[in-house]
Image (tube, one colour):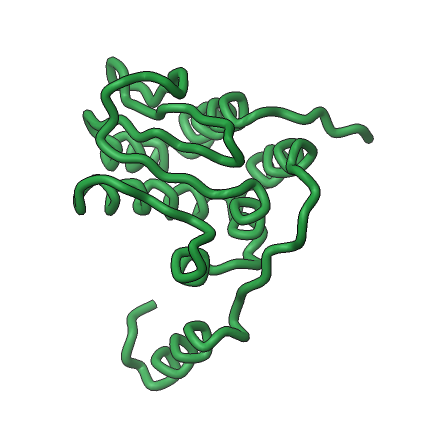
Length: 166
């Protein structure tokens, strides 16, 4: 079976469409988190702006202005996050993911990412979309990270001691 590659704009549009039709509560949370803000997203030089327009999440051209925040990463890091091979905290610490803007805007960017990661972990349709996006990922070294890191071990210990919630 051949997998047709897709670019960033098509990939995000497909994620949004899937959430809207198949995961309406996640879509509603995403719309509420984004609110009236615009965020510029860049992955490996491919850039789009995500915004709510007339109550719907939309993907706009990358040069759309103004934006309230911006973030970026690489396809390899994003796919490692989606696959569960990389933890968000490690991606941030190692500079594999970045966000800029006001504290509120950056918080909302990461909240939106967490919503998508949560749905992706349990959605075969979004895993299929990730496979299509993987088809356009540039070759490169694999992204490492995971529970073997000091942060992962510390979180496991805190969890075992009942010091963090589930």
